Picture 1: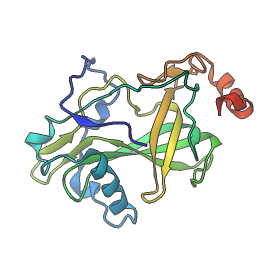
Picture 2 (picture 1 turned 180 degrees about the vertical axis):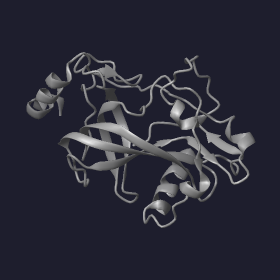
Picture 3 (picture 1 turned 90 degrees about the vertical axis):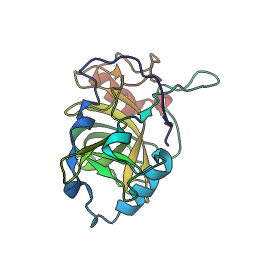
Picture 4 (picture 1 turned 180 degrees about the horizontal axis):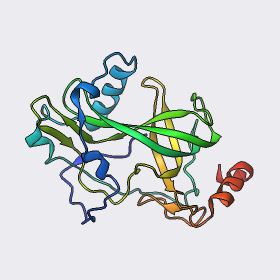
Length: 224
């Protein structure tokens, strides 16, 4: 589930505290390319397909590529939480991340370790409460042996996952690469459900306390 497109899009001004600032902190390429990971080729192929740049990425050309935060067109009122087959729904914490330059050198993506705190639905995924899983986002920065940095799709965004924050996440499991893509997210770090995208603005869950949210998700079929 990948509703994003590479484009030379105009992004509205964002403050220096943009939530995706962590994407600009480079991962050394020696740590980025862990070729022993069985899923690496599948992950590269997935992200190359959706976010492949037309040329080999260099420090010079990568910084000019931007991502459109976009908009969504719907017919009729959407549910408070997206509904789709094999949905994975959980509350989790952003623990750590690293950026990866794909083997083709046409894309950079970031792998985020999420600590699962409350698991409501796991679909056909191996997600488990108390465990960790990998969420991947397009964009990130990788440092080359000569010290130069390839920083791809790291322009300030209005919404993104942030380190040490906790989220209600609606995820889609990508079996081939054993990772999860984000369908929607809400920030619950301060104990209240807050909007974390330009589309999740309905009043169905926004403003609830975390305790109220957990109770609803465990017992209210209307949100599932």
